Length: 387
Image 1: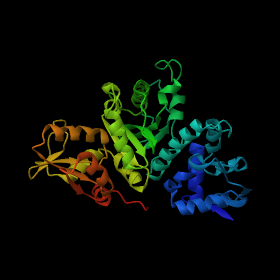
Image 2 (image 1 turned 45 degrees about the horizontal axis):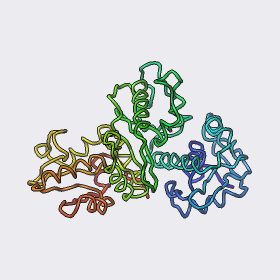
Image 3 (image 1 turned 180 degrees about the vertical axis):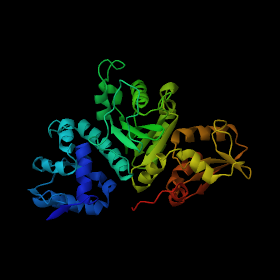
Image 4 (image 1 turned 60 degrees about the horizontal axis):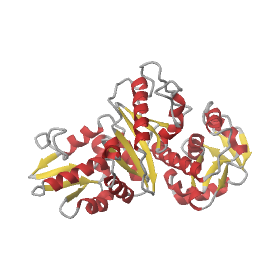
């Protein structure tokens, strides 16, 4: 008998699958210990008895089914297990059936990979404490300017963003507008467009992404209670820092500088899809997180005025740049600054997991000062999460 308790691995699986429909087998480490999750999934592919904490009701079903091969291997709920979703939330089953065509999934690789990109992003955010469940989040609207979204971080999947618009809203929502964006993450006084490049170099469709950015900006204006000039920030998820390096190099080869991804978004924060990335998301969704980090790092007389240069402070003659936000768009501009003024001494404050990447990208001249994420979390009043 398996009891479905809040916070248990089975409960975690049910929650993520109720949101994303299917989950990539190769990314189970995002949900906990990969070894434990694999053993659990094998068990849940056979008929088990499940008991709920709420009323003790017992379900005797196969909970999961696994489809596909190698990188396309995907985990889904078994059809006979769908009624268990009622134990999560009264609206969970209805939301699931509406989102996933009454539990019918297209089998082609493009749909599976798209669903996997969304699923990985949702898993990172869910573990970071971001609300991702569409059946819990308030529906967005484009008719009146009012405060709709929660005051805490919330992730709206692109599929649900599309449903917000009608054909009369800025010409409608063409399918191509969200070819790469997997959703939007709202936090107090801020919003990120979210992308997941996984382990491949992201191919950007500039005009489509510009249109998507305009529509997300409208969603912020109508639903967040503040009026942005435009969505300036994005989160780029990937499997490793080398993906960020490849994205940077690919961007620099572009023949249309106005459509480069670092032109579309002024800040692009690379988030590795592991526990460090989960911890980074918790930092990036705090109110005024950037100023709080810089205040903790530097004395007031060391700081330079924002917008005057692509570094943050001058300390003992060193021009110091903080990469604790993992902003690779700003990193491009910082490297340009180094080339334009090679006579200066440059120092970068970074996390240990960023060091190899930064050394390769910036060269041997730069001084790297490592700072553990635990120290940043402590300075911001965040409790560390377990690996």
